[in-house]
Every structure is written in structure tokens, then in C-alpha cells.
Image (cartoon, rainbow, N blue to C red; front, side, top):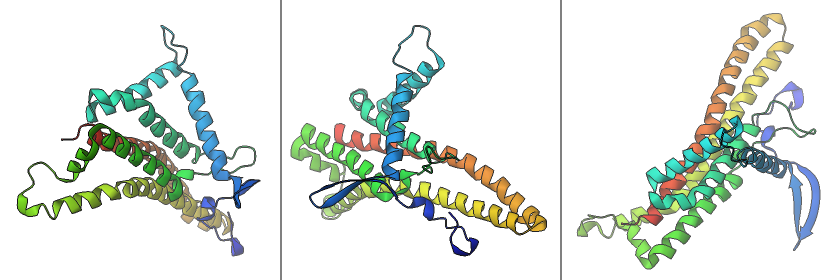
Length: 260
């Protein structure tokens, strides 16, 4: 969005805007925002994707192969990181992975839907934080449910010398508690940084075009080429960040399931 003086504001794309005022609960206004709209869009896209694999045809269609391939990918990840018991966590990790993936990809659309500009809600720490807390909560619930108070032995690695017993558990506890913050921060920073860079390059192209043919060629053309490359990189980052989030979640689940 152009600000005053023809300047491009790279942060405007992250502004949460109200689409519908909604209703009030306990004095708090519950509004339907552009962030909410694109969350719904991500869920609808995920449901549409999964519907392609529900037929279970003997000769699979391309859609069925895509769904089965994605499911097998997450299943293999959990089998490698958690073991046989990881299969029961496939639905959650798969849903988490695909939801983040669709959220990241929808935010890269060049055009809006029904007048609503694409909005990458994973570029907001509040959203990634909720997803991280959900995963962290599952780890705590599973850990205490399976092991009881023995779960605290996670903070005392096997073979820790007696003279370090006063220090290692504190370090391990701090490291454990930081997990949801680092998990949320990684996705939030990656998506925000990429979108800011794209917006800045778009500003270069627009301003160069308005400056005449000479500056349009000197600044605009290299910026356009770089923007195309960065856009392709962002598509890769969208998948990588969804994978990293799912991978780290599976590793955290392993700590809760296979406590030594």
C-alpha cells in the first residue's frame, strides 16, 4: 500500500483489518478480520485437498496420490523420530503441517479473493504462538499421562555427573520452556522477513517505473528479476517452514513418548 508521498509501506500488509464487527462477549468485541478470513480459506483448502483422497480408488487419481504421498511423508517422519507409537500422532502433525503449508502458500497469492487482499497470518507471532503452545501442551499432557512425575527426569540427562546435578536440570528446564517460543518465532520471522523483502522490491519497481525509462531500466528491471527469484524462494520457504514446524513437533513428542 502506498503511503504519503508515493512511498511504499512494507508493514501495511501485516495490518489486521476488520471485515465484520461481529459480536461482544463479556465486554470484548469478537470481530471477523482478514486474518480470520484467510484462516478459514486455509481450512477450506485443506478440506478440499483431503477430499481428493477419500475415494480410495484401486487405480489412484493424481489427487489421491498427492494426499497419500503427503500422509505417507508425515507417517514416515513420525516413524523415524518417535517409533511405532508415533502413528497415533499422525493426524495432528499432518493437520498442523498442511494448515501451515496452505497458510503460507495462500499468503503468496498475487491477487485477492472477493476484494480481500492475501494475508499471511503465519507472519503474526500471536498465530504461530498459539500453534506452538498447542504442540507444547500435547507434549506435556502425553508426558505426564504416560510417565507421571517421572517425566521430570527429562531434565536430568542420563550420565549427568553428580557435581553438575545443581546446574544441568536448570539448563534443561529453561531449554524446555523456551521451546514453544523458539518454535513460534522461527515461523513468524521467516514469513515476515520474506514478505517485507518482496514488498520493498515491489516498491523499487513501482518507483523506478514512475521515474522514467532510464531509471526504469537501471533499477526496475534488476529489481523485477530479483523479485521473481525471491518469490520462487518464498515458495520453497513456505514448504520448508511447515516441514520444520512439523519436524520439531515430532521431536518434542518423542521426548514425551520415549522418555529415558
